[in-house]
Image 1 (tube, rainbow, N blue to C red):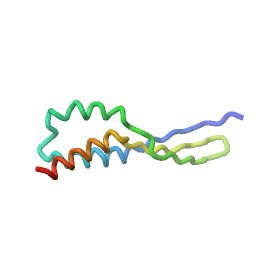
Image 2 (cartoon, rainbow, N blue to C red; image 1 turned 60 degrees about the vertical axis):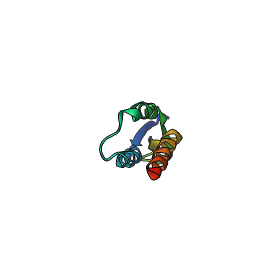
Image 3 (cartoon, rainbow, N blue to C red; image 1 turned 30 degrees about the horizontal axis):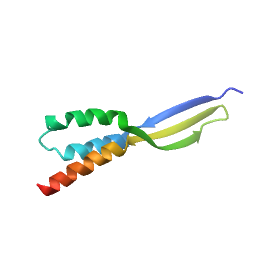
Length: 85
């Protein structure tokens, strides 16, 4: 029996995290942080994955993505620095 598998990726958590990061820089992201941000692009992880059965022959997966620990550490460091200013 051949089944068709569908994958749907949800990047809304990534968008929320980007918006949170941008809120730390109301005047734009300083050049000194651009290198850090480029390295975080490879830090996207699957945070949740929900199987959804559509029919007997079609199996779907809904995959939620977000930035991983590197992004969280970077954001925490920014918040700490901002709190000390």
